[in-house]
Image 1 (cartoon, rainbow, N blue to C red):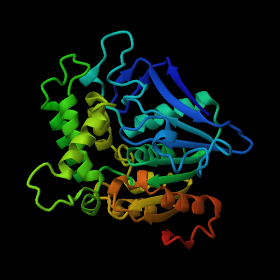
Image 2: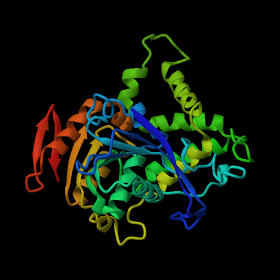
Image 3: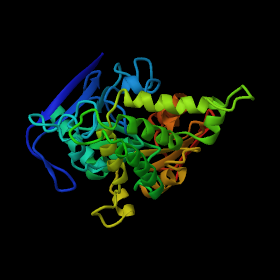
Length: 357
């Protein structure tokens, strides 16, 4: 049912840093059929290490029998530049020379949004009924809805922020230090940094999950153990799992993109930037998220004019947006299928609170 494609934009693309890519390739998936009369476009902005096959990694929210399905919607998910999964990035740019690897230029969520705006125009999509993104994807969705407010009707932002925090930047820098301490990283080695990436992902997992989540899922039943703990093997497994499907150069590139996120950059203030958003907006936070604490989503909901705030409970911390599909579905469907009443309303559904600011 999905349609995997790659679009090559053969004109130069100027990055926010001022550097220029002579062309860009954008890998993307579509599902269903576009019907401009029904305004049925759902556009997904993916997170740090995801690909453009949203049915693969967000099953339960997107799928044949889920809230967003190809029978009712035209669903688009495009891979961001700098990533591992087909769009222009460290392993495949330039396309006719040696890949750039650790020399790939700095990119930002604003660059992601501008690249996907080019793709939207190429696809002939007039309006986006719903733009949705979590984490790094939420940062991209924010930038896009600020720069192109007239084409986005509804916006869902999950576990994201207006500006990346010093705490988040510190976590990302620790991961990059681990990768760059791997002597195989750089020097023209396409496979370089693999062991460093394993360590980086292990560090990242500590920010993606919560104390309670580890306690519930990784505590050893055997009381007499003195080594080889379940949590140890879990960290190694998660590191190896990512290293088997991703590359260290893209990880460094995209983590730096996340650090660079700041909707107030080259605009008067964060608040004024957020006031440019005209879409009906739902901002969702996760109670146990330490990487994107819920105060950051409350800030967004308070500063975006047509915003509601919702929260979900999860022991899985930041990763809750990939796990708590029932809670997300309830919040989003309530938001989409019930009109605002003077832009202020409060509902309670399945013990999940959705409230206006």
